[in-house]
Length: 278
Image (cartoon, rainbow, N blue to C red; front, side):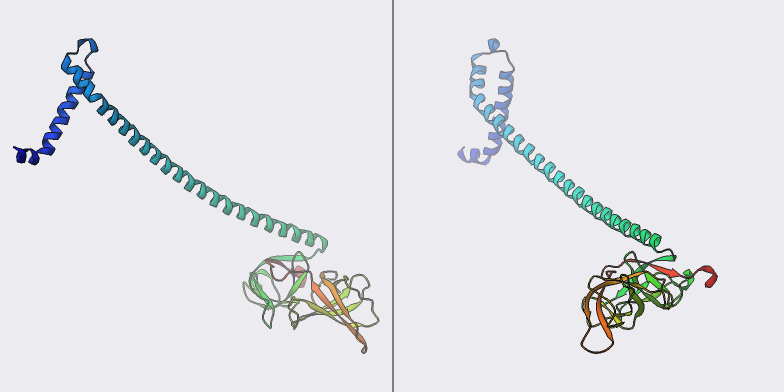
């Protein structure tokens, strides 16, 4: 008998629990004044079990509810991260548009101050750290660009076109050692030549061949004289940083910081000759 009980213990226990549950349900649904003694005993015995089941069920429900809340919070956190990332990207795009609009407004102001026939262009490659300092722009002969055409931006003179293809052109910068632009001191009209200074890591120029007797001082603005080929007069070139008179000779030199920042230049304008002179 004991062996038989052990063999079918799980089945018998399940049947007993089932019978007890049915009896408990029946007893609990019977009005109290209609119960017999057996039903009262069933209710009394099943109450702790029912309370335990309800407690466990409520606890499990609470855990599940907390788990669902955690999943919802994680999803909301991911959504917030995505929204924040999108907002940062959008803010970066708006800042870039704002910077571009600022540059374009300054270029328009430059055009108004120095009326010429301008062709806008964008720089597509640069070489300012090598022995030869130049940039490539996205306009060429198909757009009317000619060799030796002056190139400027909103800050001043950039350089001069030295090679022209159908849709692109190469520009020799004024900081290149092979560049020379006739200039003068805006304050005193003292003449000289702006040349690239490859010995200077600050991408500077030198104002050479100015007579020692001429008045040149730190802070003076150098502009184009309009005498050499192509450059209209009065275009800003740079600011005098230092003056070297020396003890002998008839000339003095000056170190000039270009007004154009060649490390972050993006857009330029090519000065084209009038239609009747092309």
